[in-house]
Length: 198
Image 1 (tube, rainbow, N blue to C red):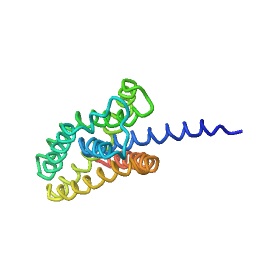
Image 2: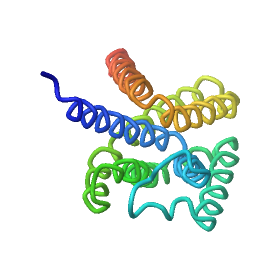
Image 3: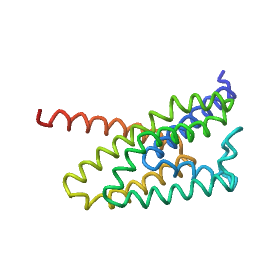
Image 4: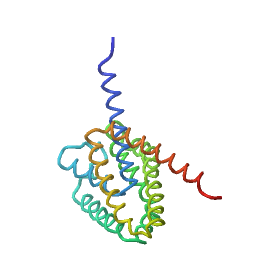
């Protein structure tokens, strides 16, 4: 006979881990946006960030995340500055991805354990879309002289926001899409490297 409590526990774990993966992936495109979304949703009572991460919904944190998000989104539209942001993002986005993942995982773990798992899961998950973003931006710059970069940036804004919001609505679906997109991106990069002249 099936144990409904076991099934419920497994579903809760899968959902929470999916949320963590999706938020970290969003951070790979826009470092502060998923923290802002998570904080706002927690502030209005829609999301539960777990013990130890409630500060993400505080007014000072929301103000800081909001300002950082606006500056990052605006700066990413300026040619040359966008590449500088990508260099800084190589260090910042994995950290914010880890923090976002840890906030999600704190629902099922002690905050310290959630932070460790968040680093192990969130940092590499955020780094993958960041690397894909940087590669796509390099192609855009090379083929259009940077003229298409602001338009590419707007698509990244929309994608990061959609992933962060939908992560709270359909986390398993979003995480699955993130994994598929990551796999397709990895194959695309491999093909480009194989086709590049030696």
